[in-house]
Image (cartoon, rainbow, N blue to C red; front, side, top):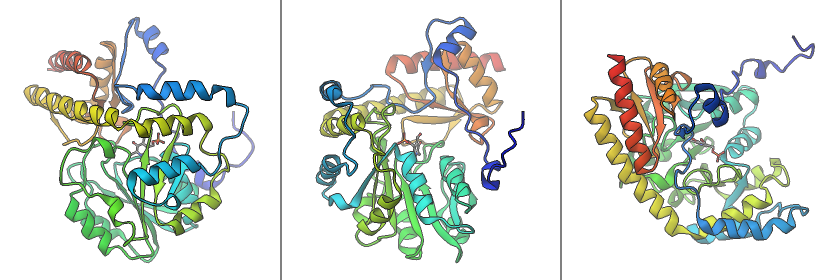
Amino acid sequence: MNVPIKTRAQIESIAPYVLGQSLEDIKQELGISHVYKMSENENTYGSSPNIKKSVIKSLDSLHLYPDGAVRELRANLAHFYSKDPSEFILGNGSDELIRLLTRTFISEGDEAVMVDVTFPRYQTNVIIEGGTPVIVPLVHGVHSLQNMKKAITNHTKMVFICNPNNPTGTIVGKDELLDFIEWVPANVLVILDEAYYEYVYTDDYLESLLLLHKHPNVVVLRTFSKIYGLASLRIGYGIAHPMIIEELLKVKEVFNANGLAQIAALAALEDQEFIRECSDKNASERKKMEKALDQLGLTYFPSQTNFIMVDTKKSGQHVAFELLKRGFIVRSGHLLGYPSMFRVTIGKPQENEAFIEALAQCMIGEE
Ligand SMILES: Cc1ncc(COP(=O)(O)O)c(C=O)c1O
């Protein structure tokens, strides 16, 4: 039925986000008792055990509004990164910070440069505000900053660089990114989405926080959803010059970072040993997965994250369905702009071994 209320033109052009089925539905539909969820890039090792204690302790205060200024967490983040609390803003996931950035800075007709394919929320939020996404293709799964430079005009308000990029897992080289930031006009925001920052295992990665003083047009986004394992609580943060943060604070909902999320994030941030362990284990599993994929004769983008985008050279959707029948949920590439590929989240050693075995069966079945 058509609802007789006209939607804003911008909203009409947005395709709905395709969410995966629930685990229970999948089990029932396929008649299987166990499924491995390897589709959302969550931390397979969960979150720090310290978090549970803090959250349980805070359950008596559910009737109270949270601290709208998120003072303690901003102070602790500032201490952790040797910065000032005025350089931080918390959000309902880093997803919300993307929305706050476009809400605050994009006016009708402004352009925002981004790659294809990348995290889809940049494009959606720019469109919602009446801006124009200017799309630059990835080159072998990697941002081409040279081509992004060419796409910047007098109308450009912001540039999104997803580093590492979702869904390809690739990073932009350190010198290339530094050169780009030095080159970009000071009235263009450079938004570095570093949701997978803690998984990066190479020296060729720019430590962007060191640039913020010299480049007040740079905004860095990070999250507690990925390696910190708090995806369900929804908390992420932006780091930028206090002038930028002040503008974003005007636009945010007063209580956008919920109380349990704040408590959990404080405990999570404290347990850096857990983060290091997860990052180490992930890097080692990533290597093993890559080797196993090599042995299967499959190619993939070089990942610095907890996921890998694999080329089946056939229908990624079909292989994803074959994997699903064997109890492994991956994200099919047809939803991500790469029809012959799928994206798989790196799991624990045993899960990965079982996954590779299932993938090998699927690929033989495909011959
Ligand atoms: C690149 C990237 N940015 C941002 C987000 C949003 O994360 P959250 O809102 O959970 O912090 C995600 C989540 O998948 C992501 O992959």
